[in-house]
Image 1 (cartoon, rainbow, N blue to C red):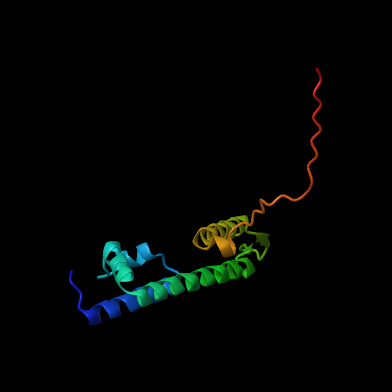
Image 2: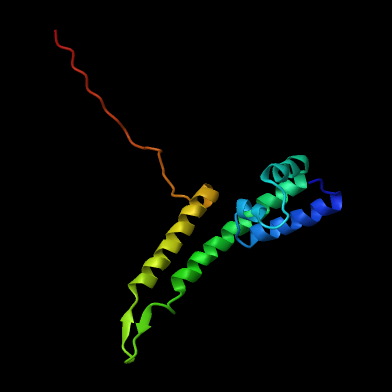
Length: 137
């Protein structure tokens, strides 16, 4: 489908808002009358401002995912189940599901922005090494 310049701006703005809201580009492009990924990436390649806006939207999405982790961790509403007699019991299924949600988001962040959210590995070693070599005839 060929887009007019005005249509490109409108569609692009909509895509950027969905990404900011936390959706993956692939998911957004599958919805509605959005362009193919090939077309979207051509738009980015041909317009530096669009490329910058997309990068910024991805940063905002990561920040939103980080905040989602905090909300999930702080949500204790489903921690207990009340039976018909009013007895409360711990809902381990809710807790396990919350852990899965948090772990999935942590993993995603570590891949989206490894420099900010990835595990830090320091491979710089400091210290002295002494080697004694004895040559015997």
